Length: 227
Image (cartoon, rainbow, N blue to C red):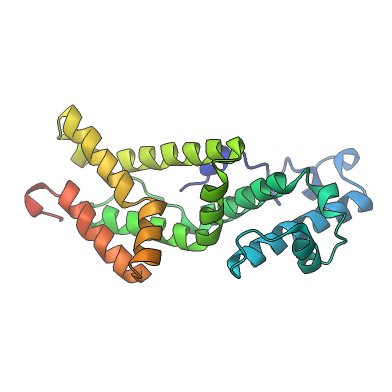
């Protein structure tokens, strides 16, 4: 992922962004103390749901979320329209936070072995950071169209990233070979693959990285040459 992936999630400007009036700009655009308290409480509710999910709560109720956040039960729905709205904000917030930490960077630069290594590290790091939230997003995507749209945009972005990162190898293939190779690359490095290997086959992150590296080499390396 790169910083542009924020657009795929419809992520609004964050702290420190010069166009965010909470952190600069003309005084008339800055919120008053009540607005700031509301924003802080809203963020606490988001973080409370994140923490509860990471502790194993698949669908925490509003009361549990409010208790963890230290706000009144009724106030949760003053900050969010409903639980779906809160879940959307949690997913957006968590995916945004992983962008800078797990961005691929230097797309297409280096030997095939170096590019595979960076790609695998980027994807496994990102999936590990948003593991529980990604599971939640996929569970809710069938019921919440906005979440489904965001996941589809992310999938399209990640496919394009693979296409650019491994452009030299893909360029030497026929059209059908190229599209098949891309489908395989997407499948191998998907969150679903990561989740299957971790949850069902009990593979460690290191083992997942090893298997993904070997699989990418099989798809991309000409004559088994990964140099």
